[in-house]
Image 1: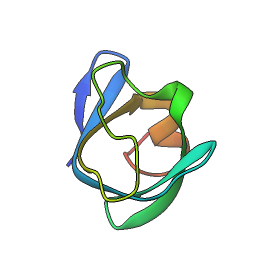
Image 2 (image 1 turned 90 degrees about the vertical axis):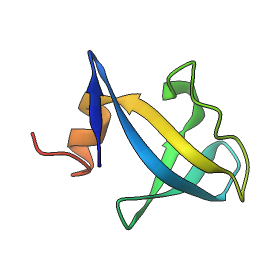
Image 3 (image 1 turned 180 degrees about the horizontal axis):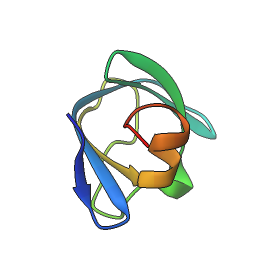
Image 4 (image 1 turned 180 degrees about the vertical axis):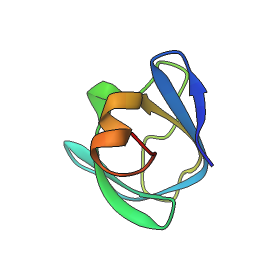
Length: 69
């Protein structure tokens, strides 16, 4: 479930399944490419196999239908 943090939203139990210029993450059951430059500074997800909290800009998450607009 996403939780707002001003301009960012946070998702729990996100799993990284691929990396490169973009991380491939499973968020709310959807696989999404995630540019590492948009991550919240407190987000520690970095490589395949990582599981944890994901902080991304709310606008980015809404554009990908991860949260309601």
